[in-house]
Image 1 (cartoon, rainbow, N blue to C red):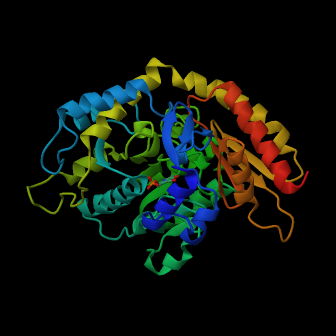
Image 2: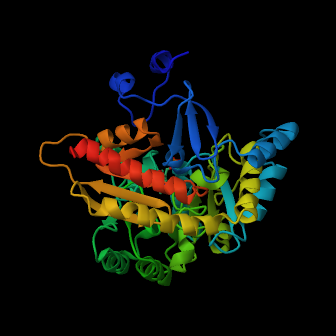
Image 3: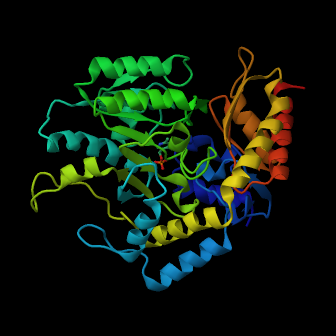
Amino acid sequence: MSITSWVKRDQRVVWHGFTQMSCYDTSTPVIVDTGEGNYLIDVEGNRYLDAISSLWVMTIGHNDPDLNQAAKDQLQKISHSTLLGNGNVAPIELAEALAPQVPVPDPHFLFASDGAAAVEQAIKIAFQYWHNLGVTTRDTYLTLDEAYHGDTVGSLSVGAGGFGTSLFDPLRFPVIRTPGYNIENWAEQAVKAVEENHKRLAAVVLEPLVQGAAGMFVCDPPDVSQVVAAAQEFDIPVVCDEVATGFGRTGTLFASEQCGIAPDIMSLGKGITGGYAPLSATAAAPHIYETFLGPDLGERTFYHGHSYSGNALACAIARRHLQLLEERDILSNVHSAAAALASALEPIESHFAVKDVRRRGLMAGVELNPPPGAERWGRRVCANATKRGVLLRPIGDVVIIVAPLSVTAGEVEVIGQTLLAAIDAVAGQ
Ligand SMILES: Cc1ncc(COP(=O)(O)O)c(C=O)c1O
């Protein structure tokens, strides 16, 4: 069946997120049939280099034989059983494997399915933590401008808006917000806000090193450590949202490592299963977790949970994924591929139609510089690159690259050359 027929069927019954469905059929969507390593293959057999890692989730390639085997093995046992009040071998084993790897010391993991839910859990845990201590006046959070933490109402509230979500402003709870990583002295301003509001703050919430959905705004590790130190000096829990930066994307397993910080609470998602299955987790340090201990059915219990929390199939894949990152020495590839990406983006940096190029590890944003009146450059450049076989997706006029951790130097070169050709085509050169 042709792509056109699939698009018609798709549009008739599927509602795509962040997508205007009225013109979905004319926006040349890719209809994926299969995946192979770093490539997606559509229903007509066309291949696309997945340069956004399927919205930043895929890590070591699609259709990986070892991850497939882990999934098959788990399916022979059980796919899911509830973690509400009972356990399951797969999430226990995953939590044991993750515990020594995350920067939260001696953590307990509360599992969920999406990044937004992992953030939602984190901010609710921070809120209840203070109540558990008998403090009921901590009713707000310090969060950053340009932040993105997901689309549930809580995660939307700690996030900064944009993407047409201002409609939901009346639903957002108020927070204290200081500038994002695009403002030079953001850290100083955050520290000042912590000092001024330390009695009111339930937590400080940030994305260490990279504000991804903002369009890849990046900062320096000491700035993050400075803000974290200020909060922790006042015993304010720091929530690190590593949904996007986690699992190797910035060059270390977690971005917090580069900042030398130990968050009190941490949100994980996206790459946790290598892009195989929806799984997320909120990790909490002992001084947080232990305040939740008390009598059965008592008020210290965390009354929050999801049906698919700790899904065994996803957890088994995630555990094998963690092993494979090590067995295949994936972080070494990230280092060399990140250097190759920096070189590949050099000719783009000096292009007249490009305003800025920002990058940490394999996450990059190429901000276009459309002339007045030019419309949808980001969309048009990405559509052009996709036609040339490199799948890209913009955020506004920023072309986002989130390369697979398994990307080769040759593939990185292809991404750079294709993007350059697409920019030339749209900018008219
Ligand atoms: C830093 C960060 N937090 C949370 C989320 C939300 O994750 P999900 O889309 O899985 O709900 C995202 C998604 O891009 C993210 O970048």
